[in-house]
Length: 91
Image (cartoon, rainbow, N blue to C red; front, side, top):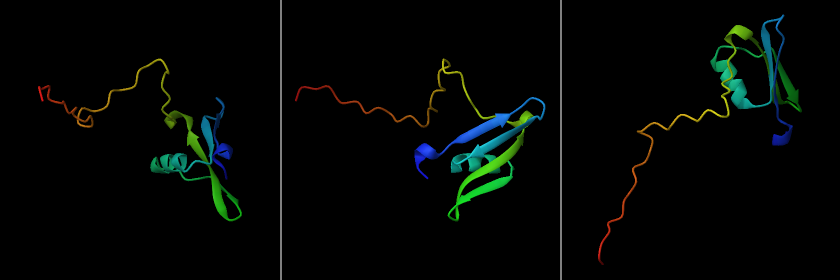
């Protein structure tokens, strides 16, 4: 499966109070399973797993979107490399 064919679909309605997640991305699979959710269905093509579906309660669903106008958090100070300054000199 090509990268252009991979997708993640989030679907919910207010009556059901459940978010249906269909994803071809392993990162989304790991994120859901780390939170304790198991796949409702797995999709295979030629014996290779290509997608998983999850059902997540709407009350506990949080994906982490942020306002595009809000600046990102600064990097931790321990992560920032110190600048090496060159000596100003005559020779």
